[in-house]
Amino acid sequence: PPRRATAKFATAAEALRTVFGYDSFRGEQAAIIDQVIGGGDAVVLMPTGGGKSLCYQIPSLVREGTGIVISPLIALMQDQVDALTAVGVRAAFLNSSQDSAERSRVERDYLAGNLDLLYVAPERLSSEATKRFLERGTIALFAIDEAHCVSQWGHDFRPDYLALSELAGRWPDVPRIALTATATDATHQELTQRLQLEGARHFVASFDRPNIQYRIVAKAEPRKQLLSFIKTEHPHDAGIVYALSRKSVEATAEFLRANGLNALPYHAGLDQAVRARNQSRFLREEAVIIVATIAFGMGIDKPDVRFVAHIDLPKSVEGYYQETGRAGRDGLPSTGWLAYGLQDVVQQRRMIDESPGDLAHRRKLSAHLDAMLALCETVHCRRVNLLRYFGQASEPCGNCDTCLEPPVGWDGTVPAQKLLSTIVRLLRERNQRFGAGQIVDILRGKTTPRTTQHHHEQLATWGIGADLSDQQWRGVVRQLLAQGILATSGEYGTLVLTPIATEVLAGHRTVELRSEPERAARSTSSAR
Ligand code: ADP
Ligand code: ZN
Image (cartoon, rainbow, N blue to C red; front, side, top):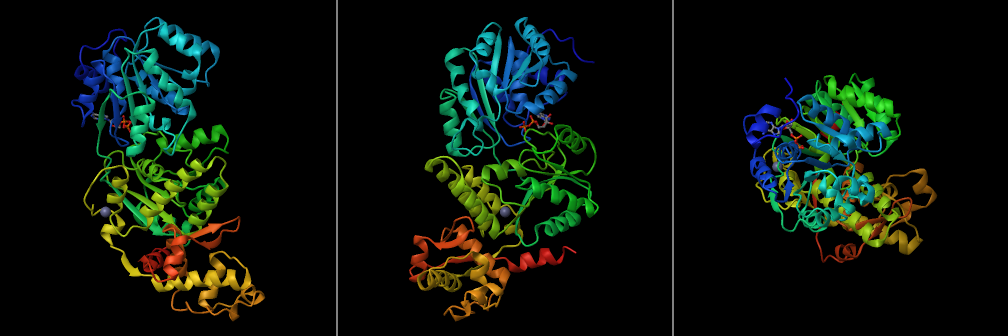
């Protein structure tokens, strides 16, 4: 029976048992909770599923007053409050979705000391009125969820979070706990400084999610590859598929449905009611697959998501880690699967070139993309690469594609030189620039209306790359782009050389490539 919601708990252990029904704390939960109950500040870096919520919920049930939880996930506040209310916790939220009667009721409860937890959207805290209002009640603690959002260097910056830097000055005696599931060293430092948590204790859990198998395949026919992956490995499982555009979300969901899977679309362009319905079916029914833009999934607590698939390249390693992290929160074997190809690199570089904002902003986006590409192209353990990105050392895992089927590295210097000199000749002799398709056709000596029109068969490099297949050449271009030897320019993604390319052409630098054509061929041929 729900407890009579009046008294606080004497100890954390009692609250854990009585309210949540658990016998023991996990990992560093007990130490974190002690720190906050004792009135100290804490910075908590813990992967998804690690149990961050209890770290501020329990101190709120023990300390006098109301725990104020700042969370960007307005859509989920209702669910979180419902779940807490169901176990007898006095919880409420304040956000823009409420009418004024509801808001007044919550405000009265807060001022009367009748709330254990109050969820507040970050933009509310930038208003002076809200701060004055909060001052009139008793605050047990501030919990800043998704604290990486305060970092301008991070992948998910939210300007509203900057206002949270004022909490320390205004409420010097109220403990603050900042929590996140994705933070590189740089982001960790930045959030500590911006939130004025220099005096806090830091709790950094391992970011490893050993039950998630990471796999990255060369993209050929993404929908077919995806279908084959799901049908072979997860035919009766719930999963999330991420795509970059709404159009691709719709088309992919339809394709999967046409092939007998229970797939539903989710993106910001859909009607609110449709989105809510699809999300709730995903949470409540068995084996539903959500095909979504990144708008989906933050804060969704579904323990048995068995796979997360990306059919387009994520923009950052943080994003990739966060999205794949939604798989396997229950600790059971799960898969993070990504299909990635030449077009992804071309498209994302172009998006960065065209993005609004200053040079520093574009540099940041480029650095994020480069780290993601390095993860895709590595010949070493994916997990080692991923954890190193978050500043954690580890050993090869035995549970990622490169550990299970080590890719063969090969010396790609000569093919790279053939490709680069074709681009140079086109520019010098003809003043022409082309995208990957035309360059590969020239190298392979493949006559098309376009090669004929431009008399490209007269070029000295015509057909000098006939030893490699179309697919192999596209792999070479993709890797040269990823390694910064080639770049793209303009709306059509024409290929241009970088300063490193000059070294390669001059023979001062070798090019190491990973070979994966058989891998791609295998996954396509099994996609019947
Ligand atoms: P996070 O916010 O870090 O992703 P949650 O706080 O949602 O993680 O916790 C993940 C799951 O683990 C939840 O279902 C939660 O109830 C459960 N959990 C958390 N702490 C414990 C514990 N000490 N014992 C058992 N289960 C726990
Ligand atoms: Zn590995």
